[in-house]
Amino acid sequence: MALNTQSLQPIINFLWTVADDVLVNTYQKGKYKDVILPMIVIRRLDLLLEPTKDQVLKTFSEYKDKLQNLDSLLTNSKHGSGLAFYNTSPFTLKKLMQDPKNLRSNFENYLNGFSDNVQDIINKFKFRNEIETLEEAQILFSLIEKFCSPKVELHPDKLPPLAMGYVYEDLVRRFNEENNEEAGEHFTPREIIDLMTHLVFVPVKDQIKQGTYLLYDPCVGSGGMLTIAKNFMLNPEGPIRSNATVHLYGQESTPFIYATCKSDMLIKGEDPNKIAYGSTLSAYGFPSDLKFDFMLTNPPYGKTWAPDKKALGVGEKGKIIDKRFILNGSYKNEAVTSRVNDGQLMFVLHMLSKMKDTELGSRIASVHNGSALFTGDAGQGESEIRKHIISNDLLEAIIALPNDMFYNTGIPTYIFIITNRKAKHRIGKVQLINATSEKFYTKMRKPLGKKRLNFQKVIYR
Image 1 (cartoon, one colour):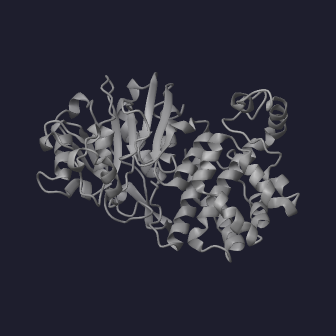
Image 2: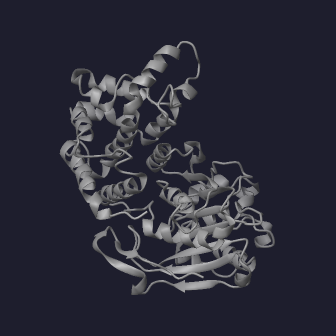
Image 3: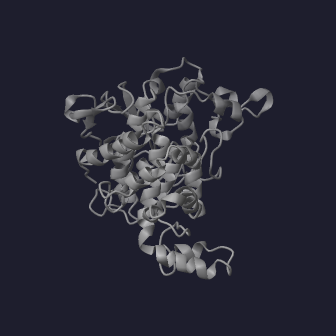
């Protein structure tokens, strides 16, 4: 899906102006996201529910004293919202402004009226913690009024998930820069995701026209990688044109990112329960025997996984006994671990343990920095992991990307393509692609954080 990102700048600027105009004397700029991001999500849900509000209220009033669980009624199209969520309060955001004197209590009533799956989102945002601050500063009305302004169009029909992803990422980049945090820490540029989908799906496109497939991202962030991958598979005008059934699974450990991802899945009609909360390494959120056909991810690199290592060390003398990290035939059949200050290869081990033993097998696309290639001497954890991957002929290709492709770093990055079912002409080989030259990218007119380039193409046969 082509998208003119420059056309989104007015809405991004407006939302930033909302923060600057309304929150400026109450919040530090780095804390704007605690209010603006949940309000974006709430307004998008509110807009979707507006057309069926009267129908939902009628059904709720009629059956609330007759049935214990009204979910099926309140989500079906005949009696309810026709969506996977609903709100049983008498208010919408616009109706809240009709009674300014009781705004706080009515707003809390409005939030409490959302279905349980939205309650999880609101709770992970910790948005209720901000209501007292907003009321004391007498800016709650102004905030709601801004989000209901015709100047900002947040309806998913007008601002689809792909566009919303760009808006969201740019806002978080700005918020984090104001707070001296790493901008774009959780996000992968859309053209890099597009490249990853080509590398994962195109080589097996004739094998995935029908059937059911599970897509997984263990570091799901805002969910863009999963939904773009699914759209790439099913696009009737794309290179795959599959008629398959596709299920999306992901896990995220940062509360407000998890909340955003789950809300986006609700809006898109995906199953939000397939997005797990918590650390993938130490608190994996799905059954241990669940395997996936395709995995795409951009795991954190250069970040400690010490809390995970401590949580995993439940064996004798603190040994890790989780089978995901034990490689038979190496490391004395003990868990293989990378150094504690960089856990990216631990996510690779996790994904290897989730590969299917089927005719198609599984395919993985994972983004890494140079540490995954070079860190660790012979016999050390990183070296043992690389040895295992290559010895078992799992590595299909490594693509070196140009610098300055990501929002938060200008360092060299690489895409690893891993599969347990190599094509015959690839068996025993690893393809190395140098995609760092100017023929593979264009310079952006205006940088976004440290991102100064847009990726264009790669040759892969």
